[in-house]
Length: 177
Ligand SMILES: Cc1cc2nc3c(=O)[nH]c(=O)nc-3n(C[C@H](O)[C@H](O)[C@H](O)COP(=O)(O)O)c2cc1C
Image (cartoon, rainbow, N blue to C red; front, side, top):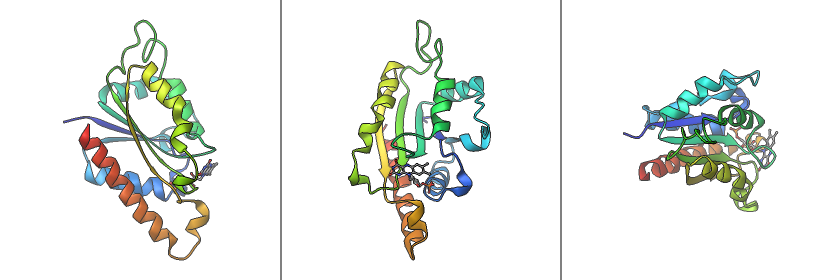
């Protein structure tokens, strides 16, 4: 059984619809997976590097789940990466702890997904992945789940349906690995 770690980079899950629903569905279908809610653990952005490294070491598959903020991952997830992927752990002469692990990007956007080449924004993550000896295993994305849409009649249901389909695609990708 592959060990799956899903890291949620949303900065405020209390104000999330899509990411919350994706994570709930994923946990329901794959209860043996582990989920790290960065906003709950680190509202002050003070990352416990050792604890986070231990979770990464445990995992075979690492999923980064996040809403796109300013064409990138949220600041909290970036901070988590900066404080966890450290020299001697993930890279450097003795830094081989992430070697062979698989990385999936799973993200949501306010804009329609076809509006922009969102995957192109994540070249940096793919480069970091390869730098650390990890295998980039692809991305799952869902667009048109903006804050503005939540106010429109019937759109809340549409967002939840999209989140459900997103979780299903993510599960299928995990099963292929
Ligand atoms: C600070 C901020 C920046 C955002 N930047 C983008 C962006 O660059 N592109 C985009 O399509 N959506 C952007 N959005 C919209 C979010 O991606 C969208 O609200 C989120 O994916 C919805 O997920 P949630 O329901 O889990 O919060 C931004 C939202 C916020 C709050």
